[in-house]
Every structure is written in C-alpha cells, then in structure tokens.
Image 1 (cartoon, rainbow, N blue to C red):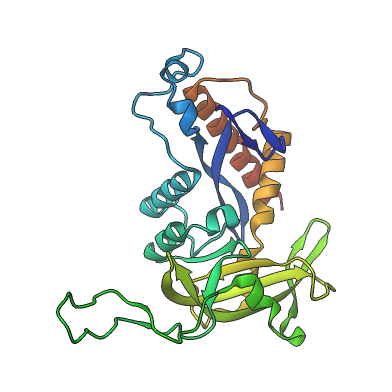
Image 2 (image 1 turned 90 degrees about the vertical axis):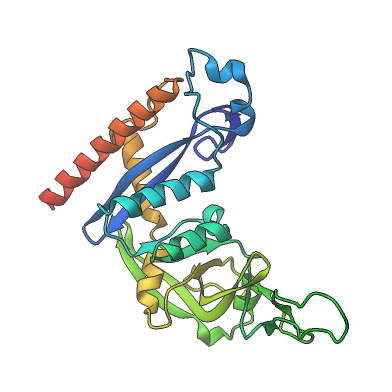
Length: 289
C-alpha cells in the first residue's frame, strides 16, 4: 500500500505490492506463499493504517521485502511439507548477505543472482588475527586483512577476466518456445560477507549463446559444494522463468491481480484463494499430462 515501485506497472504509483514464494520440482511449479509489503511511511501514518478502508491489525509492523522473504523461507523449513534442497532468487534478494546466510544455516544450497558489483576473492584473502604488539594494550581478537593480502574483486570483473574457452554452451531446460540454452562459466571463490571473507562457494555466470566478450552477463553466487555439477546449478539459477510463468497464468486464468480490495485482510483472502486455484489448475494439468 502507498506510493511505491510496481513491476507490473513499471513505475512508481499508489499500489499494493506482494512478496511471493514459489516452489518448483521435476513434477511442476506453482506459487505457495505470499506476504503483503507495507511501506514504512504508510505504516507510520496512524490515520491511514486505522482507516476502515485498510484496517491493518495493530500488531503488524514494518517489514522489509527481505524480512518477508526470510519469514516465508523459515516457515517453509519449519513445516517441512515442501521437500527442497535449493533456494534461488533475483539480485534484489541475492545481494542480501543475511538472506544467503539464513539459507545456508537451514542446511540448504542457494544459487542467488547477485549484482555485478558484488565482491568475492578468487584466492586466499590472507586474513588473520594480527600478532600482539610488544607494548601495552589489548590483544587483537578480530581478523583483518594482512599487509599485501589479495583484494576482493567485483564478480563481473572476475568473470570478464576468464579466457573465452572457459565458457560452456549448455541446454538448461526445454521451454514452451524450444530449448533454453546459455553459455555458462563458473569457478570457486570466497564470498565477501559484510566486508569480511565468508565461506568458499561458486561464482557462476551466464550469457546468451553466441555473445561476444562485451555482452551483458548475469552473475550468481552459490554455497553448493565443489562436487555439484554445473548442469544442476545452472538449472536452479535459471528457474526464475517458472515464477514469471506462474504469475502470467495466475493473472490470466485465476484473477490474481483482478481485485479492488483495500483492506489488509481482503488482500490476503483474494491472494490466498487465487494461489489455491492456481495449485488446483497445476494439479489438473499434471494429471492430464
């Protein structure tokens, strides 16, 4: 609620924005959870939130979109009704160090798209606890970069420094309009997490088939182990098409965006019923092959 950017409208306007959780497996994909995002400025206006047109419960406080995503992931993990090993999202969520850490702490692997200026190390960053000084003072306990240590680099710069023959053409999946193929490359890196070295993982990048060295690329960070195959990681990183397809179907067939409700409870009623209808259509589609 309130003036905010809407991906559907492509501009800032007075609208409602939701954060959604999708589920995809070899058997199909659908939307499984939702949260209404309320802007901090709108929630801070007692007249608006108490208005009968909105009727926002008193215990609803401001939550960022990252907070809402983390809440849905936590609920999914606690309930255990959806077996999954991977979590993926676009850079708006993948850039969050805390969200990546949450997924890792839940015992899952992530393959998050990240901004091109996200940083990582391609070699041992050389961090450590400095030796104690000869004079009086507190003994150092926090690790930091040692003199001459390797600097972190933007992930885009790392990828563009790789040789041309490092890119591999790979068919990720079969789409409605034919096979989805990309050129992919990956290497082991150490993530930069809150300005410090994190765990070792993968940096993966993709670009359209036949692109030149200056083409746009999409970068991903993953905590998957070194033994995970590129084919599996690439398939997970490219799963965003399932979200787009589910939204298109939900809007066109079950009226996900066909509502004029303004009440907090009314939004959840409409969206929940729409997701249930979408899941029903998906199950029938699967049964009919």
